[in-house]
Image 1 (cartoon, one colour):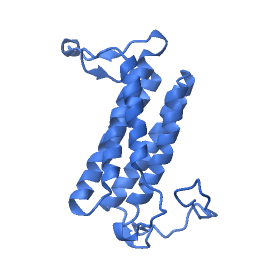
Image 2: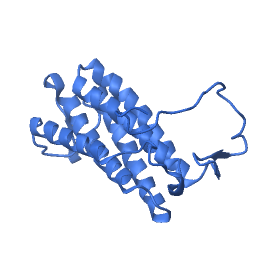
Image 3: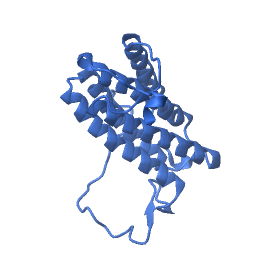
Length: 201
Protein backbone atom coordinates (compact mmCIF):
# COMPACT_ATOMS: atom_id res chain seq x y z
CA UNK A 1 0.00 0.00 0.00
CA UNK A 2 1.43 3.41 -0.99
CA UNK A 3 1.81 6.34 1.39
CA UNK A 4 -1.15 8.10 -0.29
CA UNK A 5 -3.50 5.21 0.38
CA UNK A 6 -5.32 5.12 3.69
CA UNK A 7 -7.46 2.09 2.86
CA UNK A 8 -6.47 -1.17 1.27
CA UNK A 9 -7.55 -1.72 -2.33
CA UNK A 10 -10.15 -4.39 -3.06
CA UNK A 11 -8.68 -7.84 -3.65
CA UNK A 12 -11.31 -9.82 -5.46
CA UNK A 13 -11.90 -11.46 -8.80
CA UNK A 14 -15.45 -11.68 -10.09
CA UNK A 15 -15.28 -14.51 -12.61
CA UNK A 16 -18.87 -15.74 -12.34
CA UNK A 17 -21.97 -13.65 -11.81
CA UNK A 18 -23.95 -16.48 -10.20
CA UNK A 19 -22.59 -18.85 -7.57
CA UNK A 20 -25.79 -20.49 -6.27
CA UNK A 21 -24.52 -19.98 -2.70
CA UNK A 22 -27.40 -17.63 -1.89
CA UNK A 23 -30.21 -19.75 -3.29
CA UNK A 24 -31.39 -20.76 0.18
CA UNK A 25 -31.87 -17.12 1.25
CA UNK A 26 -28.58 -16.64 3.06
CA UNK A 27 -25.37 -14.78 2.33
CA UNK A 28 -22.03 -14.17 4.04
CA UNK A 29 -20.72 -11.03 5.68
CA UNK A 30 -17.16 -9.83 5.08
CA UNK A 31 -16.03 -11.81 8.15
CA UNK A 32 -17.50 -15.02 6.73
CA UNK A 33 -20.58 -15.26 8.97
CA UNK A 34 -23.64 -16.76 7.26
CA UNK A 35 -26.74 -14.60 7.73
CA UNK A 36 -30.27 -14.40 6.35
CA UNK A 37 -30.80 -12.07 3.42
CA UNK A 38 -33.66 -10.63 5.47
CA UNK A 39 -31.29 -9.54 8.26
CA UNK A 40 -31.38 -5.87 9.23
CA UNK A 41 -27.65 -5.45 8.55
CA UNK A 42 -28.21 -6.57 4.95
CA UNK A 43 -31.20 -4.24 4.66
CA UNK A 44 -28.86 -1.42 5.70
CA UNK A 45 -26.11 -1.98 3.19
CA UNK A 46 -28.59 -3.02 0.52
CA UNK A 47 -30.33 0.34 0.91
CA UNK A 48 -26.96 2.11 0.74
CA UNK A 49 -26.38 0.23 -2.53
CA UNK A 50 -29.81 1.37 -3.77
CA UNK A 51 -28.86 4.94 -2.87
CA UNK A 52 -25.63 4.59 -4.83
CA UNK A 53 -27.59 3.51 -7.90
CA UNK A 54 -29.99 6.43 -7.56
CA UNK A 55 -27.01 8.77 -7.30
CA UNK A 56 -25.61 7.32 -10.52
CA UNK A 57 -28.82 8.35 -12.30
CA UNK A 58 -28.73 11.77 -10.62
CA UNK A 59 -25.13 12.29 -11.68
CA UNK A 60 -25.99 11.68 -15.34
CA UNK A 61 -28.88 14.15 -15.04
CA UNK A 62 -26.57 16.76 -13.49
CA UNK A 63 -24.04 16.30 -16.30
CA UNK A 64 -26.85 16.90 -18.80
CA UNK A 65 -27.46 20.26 -17.09
CA UNK A 66 -23.72 21.05 -16.98
CA UNK A 67 -23.76 20.96 -13.17
CA UNK A 68 -20.19 19.68 -13.05
CA UNK A 69 -19.52 20.75 -9.44
CA UNK A 70 -22.50 18.74 -8.22
CA UNK A 71 -21.75 15.76 -10.48
CA UNK A 72 -18.13 15.68 -9.23
CA UNK A 73 -19.33 15.64 -5.63
CA UNK A 74 -21.83 12.91 -6.43
CA UNK A 75 -19.02 10.73 -7.77
CA UNK A 76 -17.00 11.27 -4.57
CA UNK A 77 -20.15 10.42 -2.62
CA UNK A 78 -20.60 7.18 -4.57
CA UNK A 79 -17.10 6.09 -3.55
CA UNK A 80 -17.82 7.05 0.07
CA UNK A 81 -21.06 5.05 0.00
CA UNK A 82 -19.19 1.96 -1.18
CA UNK A 83 -16.82 2.49 1.77
CA UNK A 84 -19.84 2.76 4.04
CA UNK A 85 -21.34 -0.42 2.59
CA UNK A 86 -18.08 -2.22 3.30
CA UNK A 87 -18.28 -1.34 6.99
CA UNK A 88 -21.97 -2.20 7.24
CA UNK A 89 -21.25 -5.62 5.68
CA UNK A 90 -18.73 -6.31 8.45
CA UNK A 91 -19.39 -7.09 12.09
CA UNK A 92 -17.64 -4.58 14.40
CA UNK A 93 -15.19 -7.17 15.73
CA UNK A 94 -14.00 -7.95 12.18
CA UNK A 95 -13.28 -4.36 11.12
CA UNK A 96 -9.57 -3.90 10.40
CA UNK A 97 -7.59 -0.63 10.53
CA UNK A 98 -7.21 -0.40 6.73
CA UNK A 99 -10.79 -1.36 5.87
CA UNK A 100 -12.62 1.31 3.84
CA UNK A 101 -15.08 3.40 5.85
CA UNK A 102 -16.52 6.89 5.94
CA UNK A 103 -14.36 9.45 7.72
CA UNK A 104 -14.83 12.82 9.33
CA UNK A 105 -13.22 14.33 6.22
CA UNK A 106 -16.12 12.98 4.14
CA UNK A 107 -18.60 14.72 6.44
CA UNK A 108 -16.55 17.93 6.38
CA UNK A 109 -16.59 17.91 2.57
CA UNK A 110 -20.38 17.68 2.53
CA UNK A 111 -20.76 20.44 5.11
CA UNK A 112 -18.49 22.82 3.19
CA UNK A 113 -20.46 22.22 0.02
CA UNK A 114 -23.82 22.60 1.76
CA UNK A 115 -22.69 25.98 3.09
CA UNK A 116 -21.32 27.08 -0.29
CA UNK A 117 -24.46 26.16 -2.22
CA UNK A 118 -26.79 27.53 0.47
CA UNK A 119 -25.12 30.93 0.23
CA UNK A 120 -25.92 31.00 -3.51
CA UNK A 121 -29.56 29.86 -3.28
CA UNK A 122 -32.59 32.07 -2.62
CA UNK A 123 -34.28 31.73 0.77
CA UNK A 124 -37.08 29.16 0.87
CA UNK A 125 -40.61 30.48 1.48
CA UNK A 126 -42.32 27.10 1.40
CA UNK A 127 -41.56 23.39 1.24
CA UNK A 128 -40.53 22.19 -2.19
CA UNK A 129 -41.97 19.46 -4.38
CA UNK A 130 -39.67 17.22 -6.45
CA UNK A 131 -39.79 17.80 -10.18
CA UNK A 132 -38.33 21.18 -11.13
CA UNK A 133 -36.34 19.27 -13.77
CA UNK A 134 -35.00 15.75 -14.17
CA UNK A 135 -31.88 16.31 -12.07
CA UNK A 136 -33.95 17.89 -9.30
CA UNK A 137 -36.32 14.91 -9.28
CA UNK A 138 -33.48 12.37 -9.35
CA UNK A 139 -31.74 14.08 -6.43
CA UNK A 140 -34.96 14.07 -4.40
CA UNK A 141 -35.35 10.33 -5.06
CA UNK A 142 -31.80 9.85 -3.79
CA UNK A 143 -32.54 12.04 -0.77
CA UNK A 144 -35.52 9.94 0.30
CA UNK A 145 -33.54 6.70 -0.14
CA UNK A 146 -30.78 8.26 1.96
CA UNK A 147 -33.28 9.03 4.72
CA UNK A 148 -34.48 5.43 4.64
CA UNK A 149 -30.89 4.17 4.83
CA UNK A 150 -30.32 6.42 7.83
CA UNK A 151 -33.46 5.14 9.60
CA UNK A 152 -32.42 1.55 9.02
CA UNK A 153 -28.90 2.17 10.30
CA UNK A 154 -30.29 3.86 13.41
CA UNK A 155 -32.50 0.81 13.92
CA UNK A 156 -29.44 -1.45 13.54
CA UNK A 157 -27.49 0.76 15.97
CA UNK A 158 -30.25 0.21 18.54
CA UNK A 159 -29.48 -3.52 18.36
CA UNK A 160 -25.72 -3.66 17.78
CA UNK A 161 -22.89 -1.15 17.36
CA UNK A 162 -22.68 0.93 14.17
CA UNK A 163 -19.86 3.36 13.48
CA UNK A 164 -21.22 6.76 14.66
CA UNK A 165 -19.62 8.45 11.65
CA UNK A 166 -21.77 6.27 9.38
CA UNK A 167 -24.92 7.66 10.97
CA UNK A 168 -23.66 11.24 10.82
CA UNK A 169 -22.59 10.81 7.20
CA UNK A 170 -26.02 9.62 6.06
CA UNK A 171 -27.70 12.44 7.96
CA UNK A 172 -25.43 15.05 6.40
CA UNK A 173 -25.71 13.48 2.94
CA UNK A 174 -29.49 13.81 2.97
CA UNK A 175 -29.03 17.53 3.70
CA UNK A 176 -26.54 17.81 0.85
CA UNK A 177 -28.91 16.06 -1.53
CA UNK A 178 -31.65 18.53 -0.65
CA UNK A 179 -29.33 21.47 -1.35
CA UNK A 180 -28.08 19.89 -4.59
CA UNK A 181 -31.69 19.33 -5.69
CA UNK A 182 -32.36 23.04 -5.17
CA UNK A 183 -29.23 23.96 -7.14
CA UNK A 184 -30.37 21.69 -9.97
CA UNK A 185 -33.87 23.20 -10.04
CA UNK A 186 -32.57 26.77 -10.23
CA UNK A 187 -29.83 26.22 -12.81
CA UNK A 188 -30.17 28.34 -15.97
CA UNK A 189 -32.83 30.50 -14.34
CA UNK A 190 -35.17 27.63 -13.50
CA UNK A 191 -37.68 27.64 -10.68
CA UNK A 192 -38.36 25.26 -7.83
CA UNK A 193 -41.82 23.77 -7.46
CA UNK A 194 -43.17 25.07 -4.17
CA UNK A 195 -45.80 23.34 -2.07
CA UNK A 196 -49.16 25.11 -2.20
CA UNK A 197 -51.70 23.47 0.14
CA UNK A 198 -54.65 24.81 -1.86
CA UNK A 199 -53.40 23.38 -5.15
CA UNK A 200 -54.39 19.83 -4.19
CA UNK A 201 -58.01 20.37 -5.25
